[in-house]
Amino acid sequence: MPVTPANSDILRFDRLYIGGEWVLPEEGGMIESIDPSTGAVWALVARAGRGDVDRAVAAARAALEGPWGTMPGHERAALMRRFADLYQARAGELAELEARDSGRAIREARADIGSHHNGYHWWASLADKASGRTIPFDNTVHAFTSRVPVGVVAAITPWNVPLMAAAWKLGPALAAGCTVVLKPAEQTPVGTLELGRLFEAAGFPPGVVNIVPGYGGGDVGEWLVAHPGVDKVAFTGEGGTARAIVNVGSQTMKRFTFELGGKSPHIIFDDADIDQALNAATNSAWTLCGQSCALGSRVLVQRSVYDRVVAGFRDCAARVRVGPACDANTHMGPQAHLAQLEKTVAYIGYGKEDGAELITGGERLSGGIHGNGYFVQPTVFAGVSNDMRIAQDEIFGPVAALIPFDDEDDAVRIANDTRYGLTAGLWTGDTGRAHRVAAKIRAGMVWVNTYRFIRWSTPYGGFGASGWGRENGVEALDSYLETKTTIISTHGRFPDAYAD
Image 1: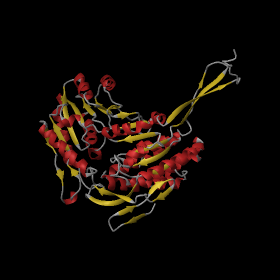
Image 2: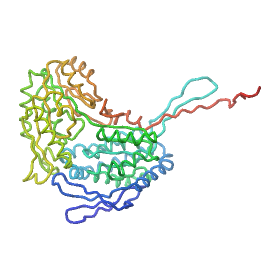
Image 3: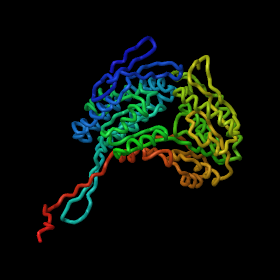
Image 4: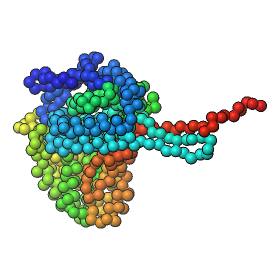
């Protein structure tokens, strides 16, 4: 895909990837991508329209009914492994694009994106493993099942971790034999477009993966989920958008996978290794500048160690280096876009209004290295009750709410008092307590004496408002497959019901 500078500062990505070709958008529109470290436009990206979605879905359907649909699993696996190797070779460059596009600190981006090729290799290992079973009946028929691709998948990714979210959808979809129309969030489309070059270089048949950046509601995103040629929607984002997708997509009886928000409890018991718990709890509060649905943003602390944990959070916040995303010394970059910065600042205000005690942080940073970027300080509230807005709502910013609890039952009650149920964590030196509490918490993933250990082989998803289905693990592969039953008569005879 041509990538040419529009001037000395702005890059121009003027094409979409459809049907194995780099094509101009029919309507010729462009999206401005803002560098959140500066607040200025850094790239112009081709903006897809409704006609482009039609072209992409048609290309995906043609690939499904053509060379990709007839390709044996082991050959699909070989292409996926080639793609994974190419991805690994360009991981550093992809990390820089994501840091520039989303504001993710480059040290985080390199560590994460540098491992994505392992996930693609793991999915490749499953590409020829989707087998059915024989169903015993009698000797008059032979009945068996087979697993077939669900079809054309609309994969819609968020702005916080665009390349990771793409990997979590592309991996199982391609392993299952589906074809994909991938729409990245309009705020962070650049790195995702670069994936098209890797699929092209790996030799994937035209149309297997198509990439169409664009806007969501009322635009290309809405038409993509409504499109009668799309069989499944895999979406990562917030609940309101997921409900809109269901309303539109259900008209054509699509399948859905939703990975939505979280307000995860991170529980610290007084018998835990407090220093290790603090390492994990502070990291899980502020990594990705707080923009992760798996963050332990509700920190539940047993009263006997509460003051110690509050002090530990305050001390750690003072060590966090907040700065431009592409600076290797930066611990925490900016919020990914202006609207998210405004939301985070508003919720800090709600915390004060609701009576929580602001321990540290709480301000937007500007001037100097922060300039006009979307930076906010790592923020800690103590004395939080679980009914406060900062405890119930997903802020998606670096705001930690420290909530005291009395005993095990109290911790479980507070942990489950949320509409979300994505992840949870707990720290304890008591093995029995670890099992008891983990079993009682309503969350799709529970970590004990660690946090945010997420891999391609471990199912990830939530209960309640945190979504439908699972990403990663063999469970994710299942959601891209349909079960087909075939019954064959062994004698070929059928009685004439109207003989007499």
